[in-house]
Length: 429
Image 1 (tube, rainbow, N blue to C red):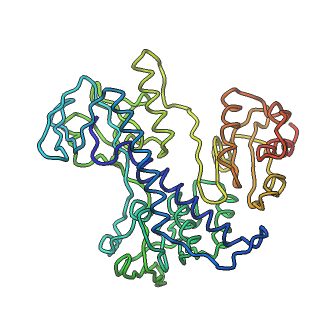
Image 2 (cartoon, rainbow, N blue to C red; image 1 turned 120 degrees about the vertical axis):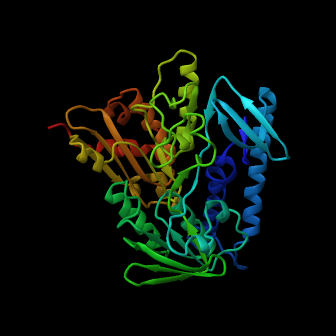
Image 3 (cartoon, rainbow, N blue to C red; image 1 turned 60 degrees about the horizontal axis):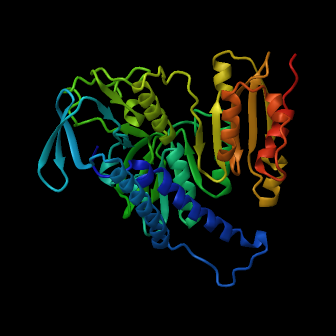
């Protein structure tokens, strides 16, 4: 195993888990802000200690790293810390972190290099040294005014997090709406959430240039002349694969125009006995998909015939409340002329949400127009991510929606929403 820096990859070190750790701290801050709503009195007031927030996150990461290193030790696999580069077919030269080099030749090679934050070629942007999610999660101060470039998953999660810690926040998105891959009602709901938390949002706003330096003061000039001034700048403009500079061409491994490793539906590359998995292979950019890529390759090596074709791709945006989805959206169904029936209810109908004081959002489920198959699920509300597994199991099993509707769900739990939303689906014509 050759690892450049982060044992266990980005998820436990600089991405999924650290960000959710810090996001939870921001949730605590939101509860403190709403203390009076819950009958609590804070006579001394409160403030954010970002150094303390960071320390909590670092403690968790250190514990995760200990688990990963122990797993390597138990497995008997050799872990080389350094930078690998192909020097021939299935042969790599490793510049070791502690000095020296090693040449490694293998019968099989598995590429799982991941991806990194993309910083677009906007005049002055690189010179402004913008934060990415990596640096943002290491801040020990609350920015006076954070300008977020990008209205996708990373940008939205970190924008809300920092707003709750006390920063003024402006989100700049080149698309006319947030989360353009989602239905319009979802985009509108997310936009309203940002407005409710007093964040400024600039949509359909191409950036002309950037001036200054993040941390010392920046100016973001938009098309049309509007200027946004902030103290810090966060680039959340998408991801790019870590495939450059490692000699893939020497190994006979081709890449796509976007730089991803070219693979077939069995994750085999253009070089014999070389596979690619996860972000670098152009798979949907989720840790759980990278894990499934591993399972596909593992099983195929033992004689299975698994592919990536048609698999479920669940996703969850960890704003508060969460946005979770799997299967078809309404816009996708319309685009592909798939007839459907829709059940949609506001989250305020969920009695557990009422007890929590968390009634923002809605749930909707698409089922077939001429049969009772569940085609897609979207939930924007408290605990939405925890609802996904129930729908996934039902969809995988081909369960007709009335069977799920008639289940007995414990009261009062969020999962009772399935009874409500599935009861809202109109009968077949």
